[in-house]
Image (cartoon, rainbow over all chains, first blue to last red; front, side):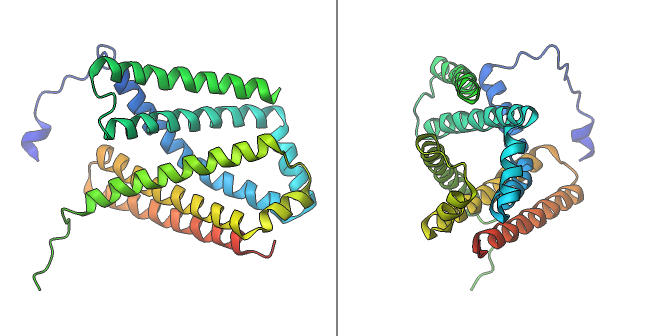
Length: 126
Length: 116
């Protein structure tokens, strides 16, 4: 492994121009990791909602509070971004939109549609 | 019978397929869930319990969480394989991840099988 670590590495993060497909790909990973971390709190909330009328009420209250709703919005964005880039992934798997300009457009599209979804849900919540 | 080498040529394809099948199921389930509650919201505990008492709903949730946990495993594993280079550390984080996911699976099973 010695020879590998001694190779010169050029990694100036400020000079790397990551194409949009790369940005969306990294977002897919980051949102994915966050969604995994959110599994325990989600299971906990489900359990609380089922335990008794009192815990159900408090779960509803927590989710309905201002910080609760803000968190729900962030989680929703992470989920739909992951979902849309995942759908893009599935389409690329079956050779749809592999061509570069189309692939770049669809990468942008996942971002646009996830933000639009977020705004719609935000409006619906208020 | 000839012993198979540990990393069979097959195993990658299995994970690839698993990741996609679980993704599609979760997508369909969440779509159903959101539409169901957008059309007819449940805001009373009794109604929530009644809905959740249905076997179909519990099976739907069971498959959803099974999908989520398997999907998490495949996803986290590929993240670790890309960023965690020392083999011993990769082994440790994968072991911890697998253990936590198994505990979550048991927790979900407890909720879904519960007499709620």
